[in-house]
Image (cartoon, rainbow, N blue to C red; front, side, top):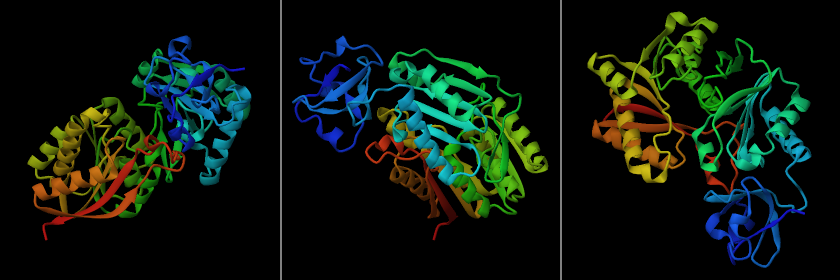
Length: 397
């Protein structure tokens, strides 16, 4: 029988409405002191009257002190539980994707808080960000091995958010051997993925649908891909018939990846790479009088914490303003944000403000969302984080 974690009176309302997080100030610490629990320990979450609300795991040292795994208090997080949830996640992905290149597990949205699994064919990248999942990591590996018989599984546990849970940072191949070259396919374009040493799990599947939409807009166009990483947008555009593509990134490692992916798709002659700070490079391109028909701005999160909103929102405004300055007449601006705190409306306002500052008219004609392998939990707004806006930018009316 699992120990109980009891909530204060009326604090169960949010949970009953479908949320799956319990905050430390919601716990009745007289009845169930948090100090009595260990990080990752499984518990039954109870209302103030002792009625069970579900099963989850606890971390007494964090603001989100418990996460609900199931509404059934009879279940436990074990190999059987993991197998069922991962199989359910797989069914959804196979409903949408024909080929085995997708995010297999997306944390809370798949009922496995703190677990992300990206599938690159027969190679799986696993990232754990909660103490509860860390305690069952061997079971996770075993379940993935039993279900998919992968050639390799790598733990990409090097994200800073692990520090909040008191977890160490590391990267380790825990099963098999990583191939020298790992190639995935997305929107009829091939990409070589650096699982070891790459950002996050090695690839960003979340913009897949928007990158596919871009393909219809770039034939014969001059394209600028800012914050390009491995060329997810840029190489896709080149492969879809763009006349020329310039990729900008601060990382030499990333731009080497762009070169590899350009060669992989036979578009090397169309590609140019520029290493440097995006703001500086855009200003230099403007000074040189260079113009593009399509500019993509897909930066890392400028707002990681709520208190950084003002500074981050201004960064989004500035980068989009400079991007518009290098757009040719009737150009297309594709701008994105992965900051949860930067809402779709915030991003729209940032672009509109930038446009007015330089006397441009913008028309929002298409909107993109995270792909279906990043499902959204309706009660957990944090699971919806990708915003992509497609604008036509014209001289002021």
